[in-house]
View (cartoon, rainbow, N blue to C red):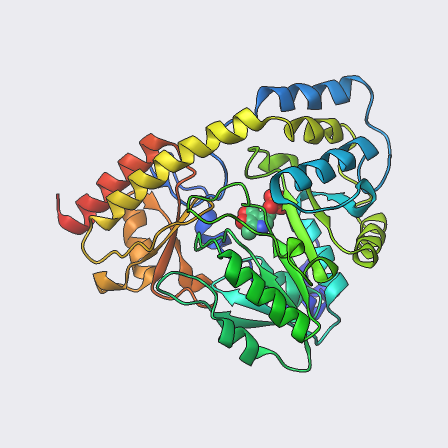
Length: 384
Ligand code: PLP
């Protein structure tokens, strides 16, 4: 490696750029129970693996259509209509290397350097650094910390002449909140009134555990022409490492997304296109995973709620519990460090804006890890 003094300077774009939860996501020793990773604790369904291997064996290893094969884009469009009532044609779909890349394109499409984007805090750890990366300015509007639902007046009050976009993530990582259809309508109305874009990260849209449905702002009056919908295969199909996501939105936005992809990633791996298409018909697996998550959620929610000092607002969707640990008298960092010593890895939420006094716990881990973690936390806090 070159001596540091002889190196040119890395651009200032990276100065102070955050890395979210990364310090607490380091794999600990095997004796530690991990409640940290936002990754399904299931194997990728076999049909999907077989399609990926088949894709390689069929020689699908060359450059191809940038937004994804037309068959894949058609399947995505059908899926969106069937499951989320979102109307899009195959030409309106851009399949990207993970939802993360689709988010980056959507931020580039909706903001210029210096423009403001509204985040509902606490929000997923990557949004803020990703916006800062391209010179946009994240403006955090705290949610109601009793139930993590949006503060609509707070959003209205945060809008300035530099605001260009509101980012919504429902079901939410880290809080699990699922915004009600009425809240979604209000947010769309605010965007319409102020001529703002909405970027709607719907990656957990199939994981809703409450009585009201996930409603995409793209399906609401005034929403379609200003919403870029982000989604992907990582969560509901247990395909995190395959790096496949997608976006859809109004024609001009999609055209810009295609340009973004053509000038950066080109496309997802060609042999994964058929695997992603096959995944969209693996309904049984999605439903089986969901039944498991529901069971795990209940065990985690009950187990944590029974510990004095821990408040667990209802985890409405996704696979996270966002627990208020302020009643233990510890800061969230002290709590997370103490838990790690007790053999449980979890995330102190003060690492992200608006998360002070809370910890994020993923119940995507298997049931044994949940039960073992609960007994370790009880032993630590209650001397059991
Ligand atoms: N959006 C949210 C809210 C997430 O929690 C995640 C992953 O943790 C992503 C996007 C990224 O998904 P992908 O793996 O498709 O890049």
